[in-house]
Length: 254
Image (cartoon, rainbow, N blue to C red; front, top):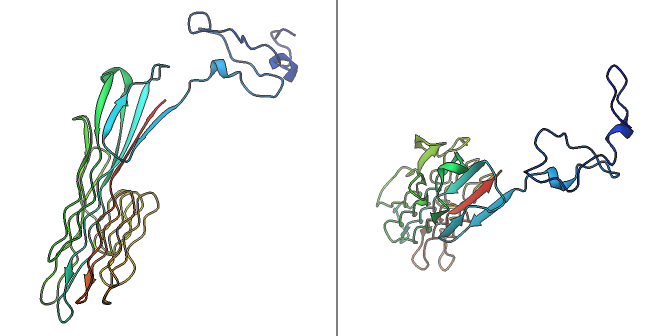
């Protein structure tokens, strides 16, 4: 049934009216109508392309088109520190940074190099720094700081933070931030959480949780979760600290 000016539009006007053979060459200006099941014919829908990386690789521009590319990245989490028992102070590694950005598909090359930051190594007096994640030379998520230790009282070392193409501040050791990574034992929402100093690590909603720390012989500090969780510390005579969780990159084309 045709749609008539000044008349009510009925549901049946939208049934079986889609052009199933429509192509980009002949569908300009047409309105997609509903099929018998009430859904729009797939020919009118732009496929979404998602490419996810937990190791370094190459992003390839999808052949089915798309206009906008959303890049989400986590740097590697920092490693925890280890000292023998006594008055020594250990810390969990800082969570890796989360950063994201939008790009026009026309501004990107046919392929872009994706670098995924490795988790920082489990440390002795100092944990390893998490590796940076990169999308070409366009955007970078920094790795979390490695934990430190000392023979007296100490403070939590915090991971470098950041948000949406803007240089950020250090993650909070106690308060979750929307995009910042967590410091030692600290929580996060998007970035990786910090590793625990002597107990549970921090938690993250979208990043990896921090590994638990340990004060017990032969019970190692736990590794941080992927993506970007900081490694747990270890203070005992026998055992090691936890390594940081590796980074991650998700690239979605709409």
